[in-house]
Amino acid sequence: MSQVFLNGRIRPASEAKIDIDDSSFLYGIGLFETMRAVGGRVFRLEDHLNRLIASAAALSIANSYTPGQVREAVGRLLQANELTEARLRLTLTNGSLGARENQQSTLLISATPFTPYPKEYFDKGVRVVITDFRQNSKDPFAGHKTTCYGPRLAALRAAHEKLAAEALWFTTENRLAEGCVSDVFLVKNGRLMTPPESTPVLAGIARKTVLEIAEQEQIQCEQRPLDINDLLHAEEIFLTNVIMTILPVTAVEAHAVADGKPGPVTKKLTELYQKKMSG
Image (cartoon, rainbow, N blue to C red; front, side):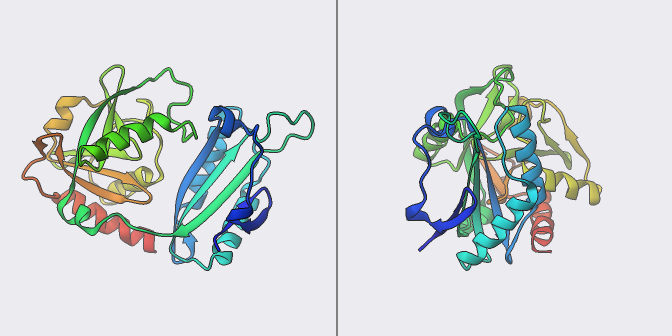
């Protein structure tokens, strides 16, 4: 039976319960992190925790746990589920809104066996569509991984109905932002480009890893505002998150990206990313 960590204890998932007046359940006020364990070690756990702590402070979400306590909980949970290759989700909320005294945040961590994206996605690339939804730079939740995720899931579901793997978001100013569950990179003239965090976009952990690899390998990279023309004239496009790692995009709507095959920069970065993740 699957085990979860909930508010200081590891227990069977079937026995885990949260209060009916929890802030995330009632109002979508909470944060989450999706993480990947490789060889029993969570890839870039410190980066996930740093992002969670920064977002909690920015959005006034209570956090009753220290990074050390979370690290210990993650390790215990992997052991309890006998997992070394896993997908983990950490959810943090303000807890019960009815608690007047000694209010405690809710911390839920789950771990399930890792299931990769289909191999053909990486071999042949995927098609993406452009959602009509828009990202608003004035949204206080923008740039944070919050549990208020309905619009993202709706756009992703619509993309899947169109036989696409992901939907790309633009801002209200018509700037390229990100995917529903991913960051986006373009390649033109051998130069890597991605929207800056100020767009706003979520500062993805896989995104950060790709930027570090590019710097180490002396691949020129720009974080700058991008528009639809940049997207449609890109020689390569790929998406990133810690579960998909680097996913090549070979079509945007009905528009083929270059020759419709994963490009050399994407392939090189994928190989280097896998080495970094396994190391």
